Image (tube, rainbow, N blue to C red; front, top):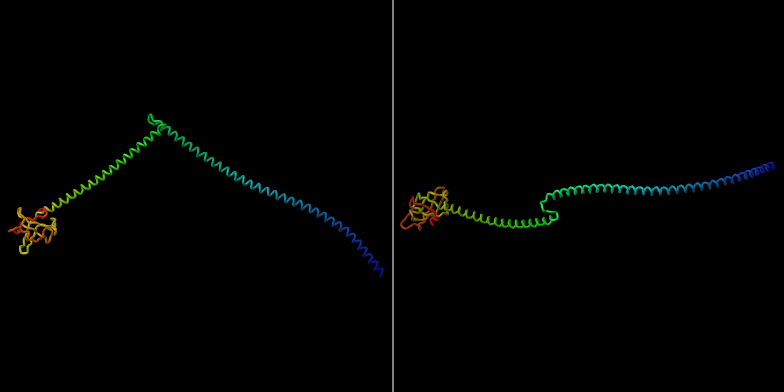
Length: 261
């Protein structure tokens, strides 16, 4: 029985050794294949990295080209704007040229209409002479204007003086009309020493008016007004003014003292 186990153990060892040997060879083979695969992978990775680097370079170049394209587009846009502006300037210059040609044609027509003997070469001198003459005429006109204003001032003063004279004449006329009073004594109160005259405010008499009583060409006396009504005046007789041996009586004339004087 022991021998059987021994034989079985020996067989098992031999089998294990065989399988180990076979497995070792397989391991070496697999390891070699793995190494080869790793080398291939490293090569592939190197190729991939090279491709990635190339792609990055291409992207950089693309970005650079894109920037350059944008710059060129901006330059093109600016050039188009300049061209458009140049066209506008050209059109404006052409318009100015047309206007100048038109003005030149009008000037030629005017030159043709100049009086005989007047030349463009002497126009400046003649115009300056005209300006000088115009300035002298303006200065003379200003002087005449000042003289006219002075004369007008004198006329205003003369008119004012004339108006004053007219006013004085009117005042004197009114005073004369007022002083030309010719009234009558209609009543006499000897006891109270007053008289009633047939003229009042309507004839220009006021309480400040001085009245004389005359008979013929002789002054009888003076009156001092007490009250004035529309057509009647009551006045006191001033005793000291009565002429010797005379007294005021109805029918005596009454005039203004100022007129009498």
